[in-house]
Length: 156
Image: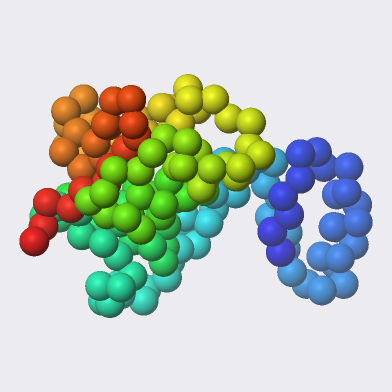
């Protein structure tokens, strides 16, 4: 039983449920901890990724794994936050084609999302740190100044 709670005022109720069911609760107090736990649980999944439909090869030894919300780069695994995943999903759906900034923001945060460009810049930087060999000189996640972003594949 996984319980996402900002405070533990429900602890007595969960303790009682645990006693009756025999299931031990895991308390998680933040979204980041929840995503880290999901990553660990996914890593325990021994199902190999064999279908190319489950991932996109961006460069030799760099893959975006749709099913597990991960980046595989040079033998290391980088979990994606839900926002990073939405950005990758949106950009990979039009691989090799620039996506306008506002269209990307709408796809990730919704039309009524009140998000500034600074938030998008932060997430783009985090993604570059996961997929690029040199995030300061990106080859895969390209900025088109004054327009938007493009996710490229360097694999033919």
